[in-house]
Length: 322
Image 1 (cartoon, helix red, strand yellow):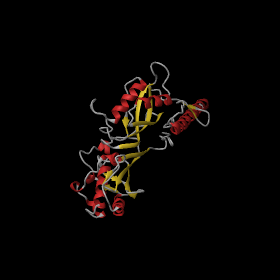
Image 2 (cartoon, rainbow, N blue to C red; image 1 turned 135 degrees about the horizontal axis):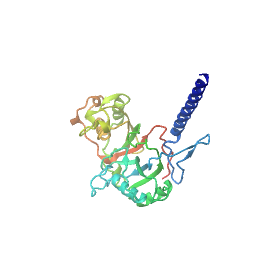
Image 3 (cartoon, rainbow, N blue to C red; image 1 turned 90 degrees about the horizontal axis):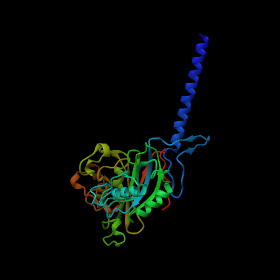
Image 4 (cartoon, rainbow, N blue to C red; image 1 turned 60 degrees about the vertical axis):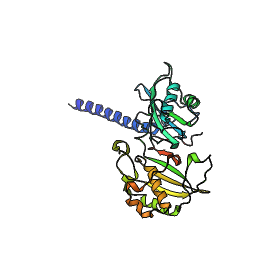
C-alpha cells in the first residue's frame, strides 16, 4: 500500500508541476500577445522569451493582424462599409488588403466614424490564411509597403503587425480620444476649412467651465446623442466623459473628449452644446439638464479620432513613423 501511495504522490507532483508550467507559459504569452511589428521591422511570431523558451503561434489556420490607419474623411461616406458604389474608408481598406494578401479580407474597426470625420489613428483587425499563395506567410513589413501603394491617397497605413485571436479592435479598447477643432473667426483659409468648424468668437472660458461639469462623473448622455441606441455596440447611455476646451495659438480652440464607448454622434453633440454655451445661448450649468431639441450637432469636419487605448497585454506601436 505504501508503494501505491508513493506512486500516486509522484504522479500528483508531476501533474502539479505541469500545471504550474502551463500557468507560467500563459503569463509569459500575455507579455507578447499583442506585440505589433513596427514599420520596417519583421519579427517572427515564435517569440523567444527571457528564459529562452519559444512561445508558438496559435494553430487555428489563420494569421491575425492589427492595422493602424490615418485618414482624411472628407470624401468618404464614413468608416463603415456600405454598398459597393458608396466610397467608405473600410471599403477601400478591405479592397486594398484583399489585393495585398490575395484573399478576401474583412476588417473590424474600433469606431464607425461618420461621413467627413477624420482619424489620426484608427485601429482595425483582420485575419488571413496562414499561407500566402500556398507559400510562407507574407511578412508584415512587405505587406505594409504593398498596402501603402494600393490605398487611396487620403488613407495612410501607419503600422501593421501580427496579434492574437483574442484581440478585437473595438471590444478590447479601453477608451478613445477625440479632438474637435473650432475656428473662432468667420473667415477660414481654404486649406483649413476641411478640418475645422468656423464658429466666430466664443467665450472659451465659459465653455471650459461647462466641459468640467460634464467631466469625471457618470452622466446620462441621452440628450447628447441621436438616433437608435445600440446597447451591444455603444454600451449604456450613462457614461463617464472627460472633456476640456483650450485656446489654440491664433484664432482657434480645441475640444478634447475621452470616453470608453461614445454614443452615436455623442462627441459632435457635446461640442454643439459647448458652442451654445460659448455663444451665450445658455449658461454652463445648463449642460447637465439639456433637452435633445436644445442641442445642435456640430458638423463632422472638425472631428478627429486621435488615439485608442488598449490593455498593456495588447501593446500599441510606439511612435510609429509616418
